[in-house]
Length: 121
Image (cartoon, rainbow, N blue to C red; front, side, top):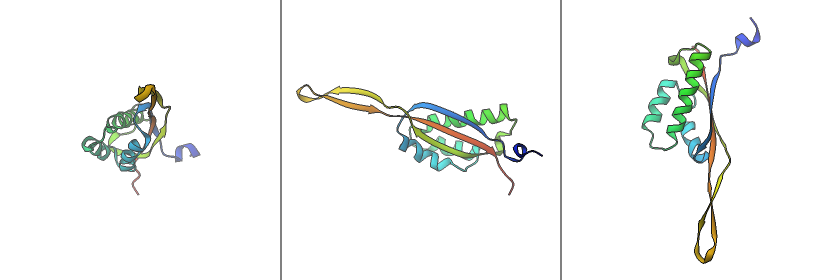
């Protein structure tokens, strides 16, 4: 056996330039990290946060990658890595009193989710 066959198969997906702040996305990712695919989907469905929509989309993409590219069973997958990094901020301006301009930063983030098959230990 080679060293590559000993390492578990990892499938991942990236969601880039997602509107929303990194801290609000991370609080959801911290809840689903280490859980099975089915448990994570159930949790995301009933969480009251706006960021669960894009996270669900990236999670389903990672599982589809594992199923189609690596031939893994979706029922046996576990979320091994889930992270959010800051993306570029869109800069917009609002008029304020006395002719001033007020800067508004609309934040974006990059979401990365990796899934691996569950080990029986």
